[in-house]
Image: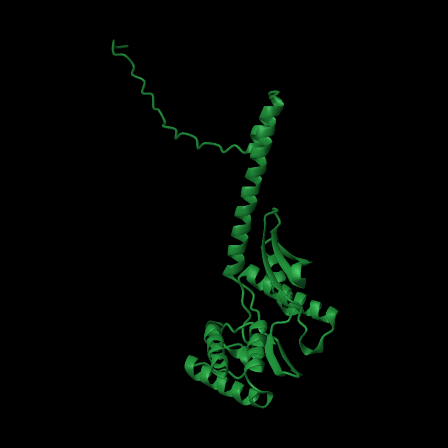
Length: 263
C-alpha cells in the first residue's frame, strides 16, 4: 500500500433543538410530592393549579360562546297577545319561553354549554331573575334583570309574579346569549329583521297614553302617534309593540312633550 493515508469523511447531521415542553401546575405538584416538598410549597402549587384550571375553563367558555354565536339559532316571535283593560287595548308579539328555551338550549348543548335561572324577590317586592351560562369545564357567567309583578290583564298576585318571572327568564336568556327575537313572517325569506321595543316598553307607552288623554281620545291619538312614527322612521308600524327599539326614546320624548302641553 502507498504511504497515503486513508481519509475517512465523517458526515454530521444538524439536529434542531427540541421544543420546550410545557409543564402544568399539576405536573409540578406531582413532582413536588415525590420529592417530599413541605406543606407551604404544596399549598402554593395547589393554589397555582386552581388558578390555572380556572383560566383554562374561562378560555374554553369564550371559545364555546364564539362558536355558538358563529351559527346562532333563529328566535322568532311566535305568539300574539291582545287583551283589554279599563285603560284600553294592549297587544304585542313575543317569542314564547318554550320556543326560546328549546331553540337556545339545543344550540348551547352542542358547544358544551348549559343554562339555569336563579330567582329571588328583592326589596320593594321586585323580582330578580339571573340567567347563568355554564361550560362543561366549570366556568360560568350570568346576566340579571329585575321588574315588578305584572298585574296587567286582571291577574291575581301569583299570576302576576309568574308572568314577570317568565318574562325575565326569556329576556335574560336572550341577553346572556346575545340573541334577539325576530319578527315572524310568512315564508322566512326576504324580510329585513328589525329589533322592536320590549313588551314592557310597549305597555309603558300605553300607560302614558292613558295618563295623558281621556279614554274617548286614546285610540285616535294612539293611531295618529303610530302614523307619525311610521312616517318619521320610514318603517311599517301597526301597533305600539312594532316600534323599532332605536325609536323608543323618540316615542317617549314625544309623549312627554304632549303631557307638558296638556298640563
